[in-house]
Structure formats: structure tokens, C-alpha cells
Amino acid sequence: MQLTQLDSSIFVVYVIGLLIIAAWVSRNERKDHERDTNDYFLAGKSLPWWAIGASLIAANISAEQIIGMSGSGYALGLAIASYEWMAAITLIIVGKYFLPIFLKREIYTMPQFLEQRFDSRVRTIMAIFWLGVYVLVNLTGVLWLGGLAINTVAGFDPMFGMIFLAVFSIAYSLYGGLKAVAMTDIIQVTLLVAGGLLLSYLALDHISNGQGAIAGFSHLTNTIPEKFDMILSKDNPHYMSLPGLSVLVGGMWVMNLSYWGCNQYIIQRALAAKSLDEAHKGIAFAAYIKLFMPIIVVLPGIAAVVMHPNLSAPDQAYPEMMSLMPSGLKGLVFAALVAAIVSSVASMTNSISTIFTMDIYTHIAPNKSQRHYVNIGRMVSLVALCIALVVAEPLLNQFDQAFQYIQEFTGFFTPGIVAIFFLGLFWKKANANGALVAALTSAVLSFLLKIWWPELPFIDRVGMVFIACMILGVVVSLTTGDNGEEKAVALHDIQFASSRVFNLATVGCVVILSALYATWW
Image 1 (tube, rainbow, N blue to C red):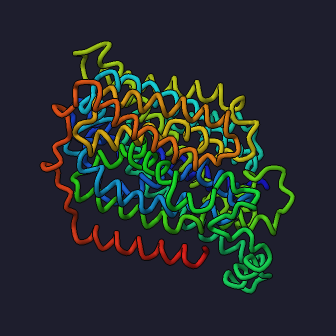
Image 2: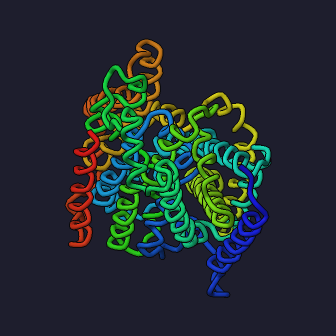
Image 3: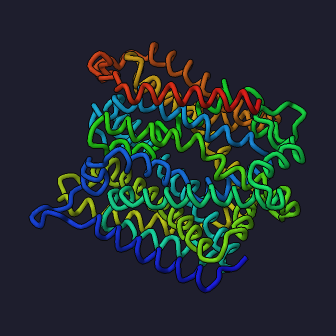
């Protein structure tokens, strides 16, 4: 599929327009105010609920999400939607129980909280770990899949596509920081959701030979019913990726809580909220979008099974389906897809620079000016992008489902991360030694289980390792003297109460999710 001249023109206009809007949003409204770390890394703690919700989704909807999950929909079917649907409930949990503590502590980063709760050893180790994962896994994954999307849709070499995405992200966010990213994300999300819904409709209408989306969906469920099993049985060839009920009661909870509750480039948006109530509204907004995301990112992949059954790789599904878009609209949706990828790249590089600057560099070079730290953050963003460009193809070219690769790789470490945060947030006797043992256990035990028990599905492995990390964290904390109570979170001083709007949104989310699983069990 190639873009027409009209598509290309619309794409160029969109890119230029977005850069102009980002520059306008990033302007310094007070000439006498020097941009500081709070402005650059947390948008001056001024984000409204709609910007928080849209930015959460835009940071999440990247090449990994759209291209990768559509590819997994092509290979696995609707079962991959569990990542989306379980994320909706996870967001509610994070907003209700995690976020009030983070906002009360007035933190910039997740490692900063770990130092407040434990000690500098935990902060430094986890900061270095997150920097490595963000650069070598998340950032490379988004750039690589984005490059593949540009190659499929526009015909450019994947490396050229990755370089374009990197340069676009620099122009888009390097000056304005998080505010430039978050305040323009509503444009990307609106276009992506609208374009994704239209693409799904066109695919279903095409499958039904013009009889409409409902007829097309019915044809899909009758033709490939195996692609609509939400809970996979052991005889399913993809059981190792999504092992039955574990998606509801096992390790997927750990994966989701780590991503949405302990992940810097996601939670950073909520940390930049005007208030807790505004953050709650934004999180609820994002949760409802997640409920409907499978229509946008999974259904096109399933439709591609019927329309393009012989793709060389599943991750080609979404770009191929974009050929259904009429000229002009195709360029606009492609522009929104690229902008969403760039938003994710910008979000990741901003979080990488935040962690490096606030958790590592300020300890190496304290008492520098705010301008100095902001400039260091910008330099780190550039270095991270350069590293990701160099290693993306060697790391990911061998995988046909990059989404599943990213999930399994991060699954080596997420059990320990969630265990550390659970203990640190909700158990006053947890100490730094227990946290360090939990982190070490996660990596070592995950690796050993991968080698010694290869037939164990990775989601089940995540759940088992999480339980082991929790147990060892408790045992070590109780047996190593310092009980950590001096730095414990004073839960009685935290405002966990939420507004009626948030509570009603929670009930609605649970009801919708229950209905979805009851229908597609």
C-alpha cells in the first residue's frame, strides 16, 4: 500500500500543524519565569483531567500497542484483548489506592518514592534498571514497530522511518517537555479512536460484501470462531501466551499493576495533575477508552485473518488493513498513527530524562541551577534516542510478534517491582533489605524458571515469582533488624476517599467488563 499525493499532503500539513500547536503550548507565559524541573518534567502540575486521560492513552497507544496488538490479534485472536480490558480495572485500582500516596509524597519519579520509603540503594538500583528497560526494550520496540508501519504504509526503509520518528519527537517535545506532549495528545487520541473505529467498520463491511459491520462481524465469528475465545484451553496452540484463567486471576494482574501503577512514563501524567480529584477523573476517562480499545487495535487484526490470510508476519496486519481507507482519510489516520507513536517516543524519552536527571545526576552534581538540570534532561533524551536507533533492528528484527516479546521480557522484572511497591505502600514493616531481595529474586528466579521449566506459560511464571518475591520480602524485612517503620507510609494520613463520579465510573467499568467476559468466555 502506498500513500497518494493527497494523503502525503495531509500528512505533511498535520505534522507541521502539530509542531506549531506543541510550540504554542510550550511557550513561557511569564517572561520573568525560568523553566524549572517541575515545569519540564511535571508540566507545572497543571494538567486537567481530559489531558491526563488522553495522555495516558496516547502514551500507551504506540506502535507496540496498535501494530503489535493487531499482530497478536491476527495470531491469537480476541484473547489478546485481556491486556486492554484488565488494564481498565487496573487503572481504577491505581487511581484509588496508589495515586493518593504518590501525590501526598510529592514525587517526580518512582525511584524517588523508593528512596523516601526505603533508602538510596533501592532508588539507585531501580533507577538504573528502569533506564535500561525503557531504552533497550520499550523505546526500541516503539521505534522498530513504528519504522515497520511507515515501511508498509509509505514504502520508506524502516531505518528511515525510525530516524523520522526520532527527529519528529525531538522537535515535538524537547523544548516543552511533558506539557507539550500531554496537551497535544488529545488530538492524537481523538483521531486514532475515530480512525480506528472507521477502519474496523470498513473491514467488517468489506468482509460482508457491503452488508454492514454487524453482518461482517457475524461472518467473522462463524468463519473463524477459534479467534473469539477469550479464555484459551490447554490444547490451544497459543496457550503459552495466554494461559486460561491466569488472565483473570494470575500473573496478568502483576503485569498490569506494574505497567499502570509503577511505570514512570505512564504514571508521570497523573503526577502532573492539578489535584487528586482531577487525576481520578483523568484515570476514569482513560479506563473507559481502554474498554473499547480492542475494537480499534484487535478487531482489524482478526479481520486480516480472513482478508489477508498469508501475511509473512502478524505485525503486518494493521498496516495492510489501512489500505481500506479512502484517499485523504488514509493520510490523516496515518498521520495520527505516526503522531501517537511519536507521542509514546516523546513520553518515554521524557521519563528517561526525568529518572536520569532527578534520581542519578542530581546526586552526582547537586546544587546546580534549574536550567542546568533541564538541559541535562534534554541531552539525555537525545542520547537515549541515539542508542535506541542503533540497537532496535538487531534486538527486534528476529521476532514476528514484538508485543509478546516485550511482555515476556519485562515479565522477568515486573514481579519484583510490584512486590516492592506493594510492600512499601501498604506494609509498614517492609525495609530496604527486603525490597532489594525481592528485586533480585524476581530476575534470578524468572530466569531459572525460564530455563528449567520452559513449558510454564510466562504469565503463570510472573504470578509464581511475584508470590515468591512477596514472601521473601516479608521474611527478610522481619529478620534483618531495621523494620522500616520510620519511613513507612502513614496510611491514616492518606485521602483514599474518592468522588461520586469516580465511584460511579468504577461500578460502570466493572459491569461492562463482566458483560464482555460473560459474552466471549
